Length: 218
Ligand code: DC
Image 1 (cartoon, protein in one colour):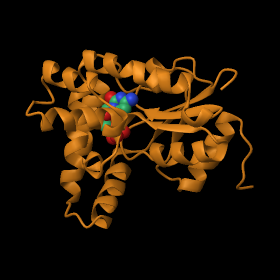
Image 2 (spheres, protein in one colour; image 1 turned 90 degrees about the vertical axis):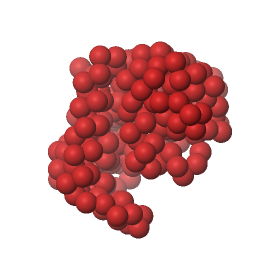
Image 3 (cartoon, rainbow, N blue to C red; image 1 turned 60 degrees about the vertical axis):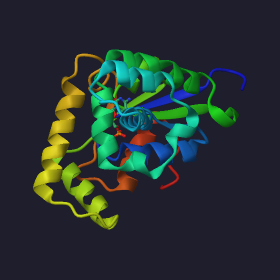
């Protein structure tokens, strides 16, 4: 494409609603969408499949370097085992480094010659795209996020108990925010949206205002 692609960075914790928002914004604006969490999930799953431990830097970085676009598909990436493995490989600096090029290439030249890209994750506004045209940090209380995740798991026919989901969510938050490399945190110039008391339309409307786009909802 000609000209510089616009970039919208969306960060935030698990089950905050950032993925739903990112997909919807991308569709509305005609931008390409990258779910960067999928990259970490794929590296975690590939590491396990190769018989390695996701906390082992050598095993995880080998999987990160061998990552191909085809690895980003597959239902197993959406499960909780993949999520836990992802948050472990994500704490390894060499893994993050290996995935940086993939993400930067995506925004520099979005697929389908799209005029821009929406990327969601934990460190998009702070590390991957510090020059993004708009930065959103989408969050919600951990109790609300655990309830959302519980509902989603049950709708998928999986057995889940609230106390366990809440505990896992807190553990994952602590790992993602507490790591020394690229911890999850809002960029200084990020627009923060707390979705605890908003429905998806409310989140979308707030985001459109933040990125300065026209609101089709009214
Ligand atoms: O958004 P998600 O649940 O698919 O992310 C899975 C894990 O990957 C999450 O625990 C944190 C990590 N991650 C990250 O460290 N940086 C990103 N940009 C995206 C995800």
